[in-house]
Image (cartoon, rainbow, N blue to C red; front, side, top):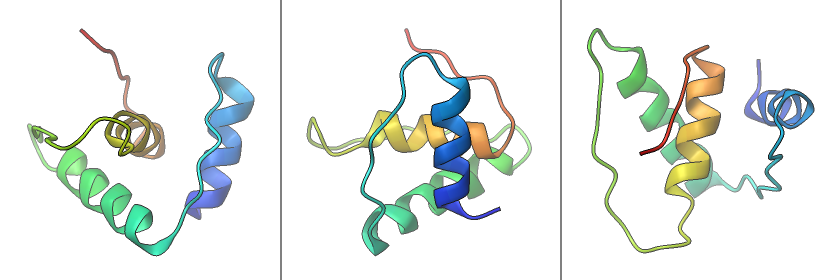
Length: 72
């Protein structure tokens, strides 16, 4: 499954669709988050400036990995 296909599928099933532009830097971050989430007991702390896509990329990576996501 490509990331574009996953994004389209996410937008079809989500009540909050995301309009993301998937450039190379964004794809690299999505794949890094996905690799962390697929590890046993995988977790991470995402640090960065607001509006950089951390939450959106994480929701998309969790969707690709078929994991449930939530926010505190």
